[in-house]
Image 1 (cartoon, rainbow over the protein chains, first blue to last red):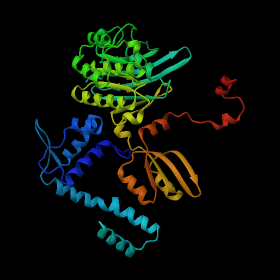
Image 2 (image 1 turned 45 degrees about the horizontal axis):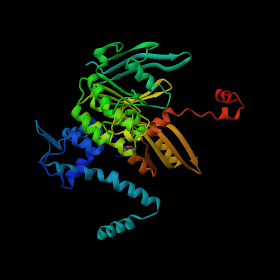
Image 3 (image 1 turned 90 degrees about the vertical axis):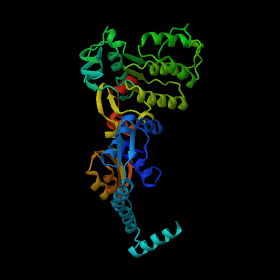
Image 4 (image 1 turned 90 degrees about the horizontal axis):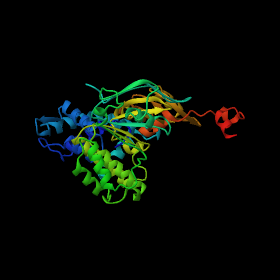
Length: 119
Length: 308
């Protein structure tokens, strides 16, 4: 776990990433709080807070007595939100650094195209 | 709800030395607390008072709502694993566990047996023949298997290697999940336990200087570096704890309620951002302020007088 932000947010992000990349499909059960705590070696209350955040925003839902499940439509909702955050997290720092180095917008676009072809 | 521990205006003096000064604390049930602080800060004194092994000079403590002194109902619910626990020399490991089984009502013999295997502690070995690390393991086994509603671990792992410490953390977490209780873990290995503890209590020279959820503290300490102007612009977002400068660039450690958006903002200002660990925060809060003037003025600091 990293130091820059609360662990519960990191737990929520890990689960979100698993939903986004398809390893936790919709309507599947997510690991229990205790399993997450043991696996990541974190306090169970912290793990629970991360899971509860996803319940609160509708990404997960609770089946009484069984556990937490991925909500239908969760993947698409996450994708939309992550796209909105993409500019702040990736594009803006990229533009800042490019400006510092004197890379023009045209050159930057060319570099992005080249990177796309390589991947 | 009655808290597991309530400390009200507690002061403890030994002659002229004040070990604890006006300490106020509330520890809730079913949480893991980290009790942190430098050597001699007052951690052990606090735990000794809470377990009725020492009297307060003034103020009061309540454990599960009651004064702990000569209170069997309270003390039977408390387990205190000390840094250097002394066991009667003729005992074997299994005798020590047998004694613990009699003392602690929630004792789980099967759990104790499995922990013995985990830590590879021979049940028939004489306690006096145990190595330092094995002795620590014995304390840990008793602390875990007692399942006491309030368990203190005071720097429990002298001589324990990294593998055994990890084993302790893993068993503590799993067992705590299944049998929630209040655990107070006093340690200097802050980075190792920072994800395990829910709440941090930091003592410095007998006073509580930090009493907060670890998750709230995480990310509070940020070091940014880059062009001085950009650093200054960002530094307004927090309290400056430390600054160094070099040729128009600055490096500043800040404390504040930072969120990921602040990191993005710092980066978009062209700054390098480093999130500091809980350990760094503890160091910043408990390192004695340096007084360079004392070092240069001959002989007027108390330390120098002692050295003479």
